[in-house]
Length: 292
Image 1 (cartoon, rainbow, N blue to C red):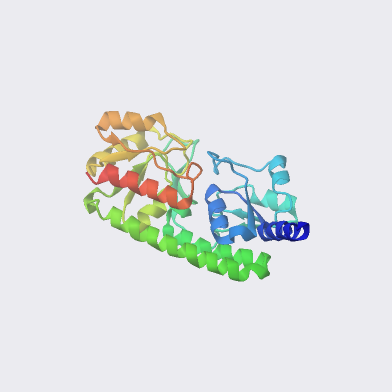
Image 2 (image 1 turned 90 degrees about the vertical axis):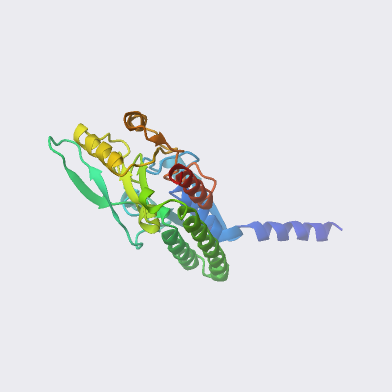
């Protein structure tokens, strides 16, 4: 009886062993990698829960944690400024893939310090994951990336990607149904920083961000006056803070205007259990804040 039991144990161990080890540099990419990879892929999330992808940079301990990883998945679009350095450190040991590199992008407003006059530049908005359509395209890119690294798993990755794209199709249908509850005249999305431009573009909202792309920068008096004027002009129903950032200036704005403070949105995915959970939370919060 020992041999059949031993054979069963070895069989189970073999079945659960991952064929591909992948490190992720964004919380939502960890979820995406698991959806596409299934049991064939071991995913190492280098940004822990509540981590901030805007400020994260991998250190030696992270590289040790991701030892033997064949792929590093990055968001791209300039979010991870350290990628050139990381590629130099990794050399030929692993490939760094920017999932968002070839996705269509939009521009966001970025305020610069050190000027006496108002000065706004426009740079690429890296928050592409707030477009369900782009996340669906990223699913295909991820499957193709895994297939190149592990050709034997091609069928697995293709099947999983198709299944997940179907879930995203349903998520998009649900989102459009929920958004339809908000009158078009009230679709002005006022948030802490400019993280929701892709969402606004896809679902017909006008974005208004207090802090621009940089959540560390507070608006100067002239910019703040312009924001107040726009809030009043469009009779914005709610201003939404973020779970990752809740600047006191939002409370001041609500006090000055009488506009209510909405439920905190999830901008970077680090506090969400999954991509779908993030989208459903945000859409429910926005609908509750603007539909009444």
